[in-house]
Structure formats: structure tokens, C-alpha cells
Image 1 (tube, rainbow, N blue to C red):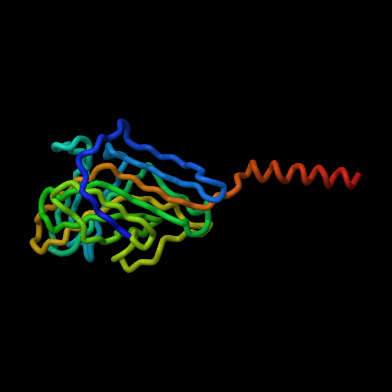
Image 2 (tube, rainbow, N blue to C red; image 1 turned 45 degrees about the vertical axis):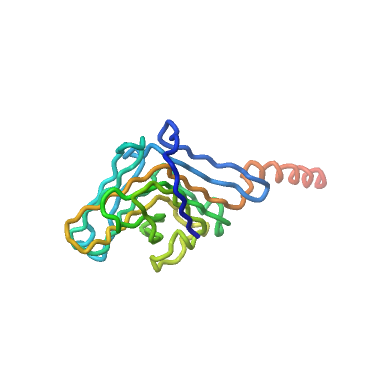
Length: 228
């Protein structure tokens, strides 16, 4: 599910990111992160396309414009066909190997607007190992708006790929956003702004090793006493 709502410029926190793991109750824990500064060192940028000539080039920089700290994502598509510029937040990841099984929920939110070319598109993105998902959504505006995506299907829609691997041997999952450069004129540049990125993953609680040790030790002691 995805949603869009218009929003005024919002106060942005000081610092490059916030990442926490919170135990919500006895059955679930929430892993979350946010970034409103978009320091280039915290993000990686790649361009995906049907061929090398369609991949183009891209950059993400901090550019204030009139809105404060945010990211400007620019791409050039020399082939004149679809290219996907993907930005991944490298300071946070969800590790399925620690909580095997499909997490009950995932939510990704950011603010965005297009700066040039009103037919570029934005959406959520994920990376696991060598696989990248760009959840295509026909959403963007030249005015600031908040985009929120809930559920794993919304994160991968439009890519034709299966869900990420959530097994005990799975690689970590990273999150971010993308811009679609779908113009038909080779060499035309596209620019979109982003702000207030956040992601949240809810997963089952797995007993900590120390908790298991505290449970096993008394049992072993009882066994020794009975043997003596």
C-alpha cells in the first residue's frame, strides 16, 4: 500500500541519522532509522537500466534550495529509455539472520518533489546482496509531498522480482528510494529532491543468548543435584 499527502516544510533534526531497535512487546521488536541530513557518505547511488547505454549517470548531493537540508538526486539517461537511479541508506540495515521469518510489517516514508521534468517518478527501494528492488509507483509532484509505503509487496511492486530472503542465512537488507528517468530524449537530465527519510521493520523477538543461558544453568544444576 502506498499513500501520498501534501506537507509543508518540516523541522529537520540535527545529526546525520537516528537508528534504534526497540522491543515493542513480548512478541515483537521494531528496528527503525531516519535521516534528514543526507550526508553523501551515508548514501550510495547506482543507476539501473536495460543496457549499459541506458544506465546513464547519477549523483546525490546535499542541496538546500529553500527547504533546508535535503538530498538532490540528479540523473542523465543517454539512451533515452527507462533508467532507475537508486539511493540506498548505508547507515542502517535489517538482518534477517537474527530474526528468521518474514517480518510482520515494513514502512518506508520520505518527502519529495521533482525539480526538473514533471514525468520522472519516485518510490521505495531495497538492496539485499546483489539484488535491488525499486517499487515502482507513479507518484511525484513539483510541490513537496509525503510518500509512505507499507508492506513488502509495495516495496517490490513493478519489478517482477520475488520478496527478499528472510531465512537464517539471508544477507542484510538495506533501504532507500529511487527516481525513474523515463524520458525519450537522450541526454536529458532529471532532478528530484528528497527529505525526512525513515524506515521501520517489525520482527518477532528472538531470545537473547544470555536469557537462554540463565534458563539452562538452573536446569543443569538441578540435574547434578539429582545425580549426587
